[in-house]
Length: 86
Image (cartoon, rainbow, N blue to C red; front, side, top):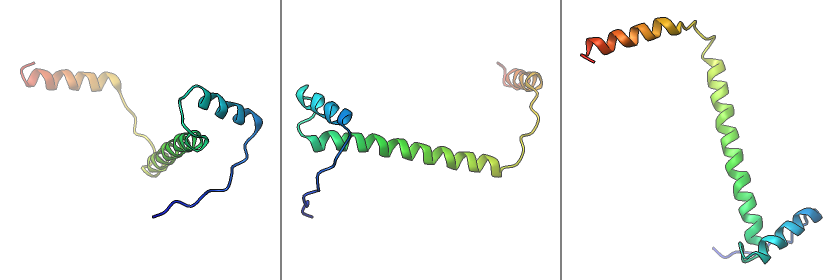
């Protein structure tokens, strides 16, 4: 597949300066590379947000939480460990 030329992207002056700084520092070879790096980070962030939203929906759909007694849980854990010879 051949890559077609993309139209130039206009960004705020703040980002223009940032892009120029990144190029001058040698961290990126081209303006496009800087923009692609930023888009890659945005894509990763959006994927994490999507996963979090799905987990929240799953939790909400699972119903109300059941009471949890930490002391009782620890007693059970100790009993299981003793039963295994620990």
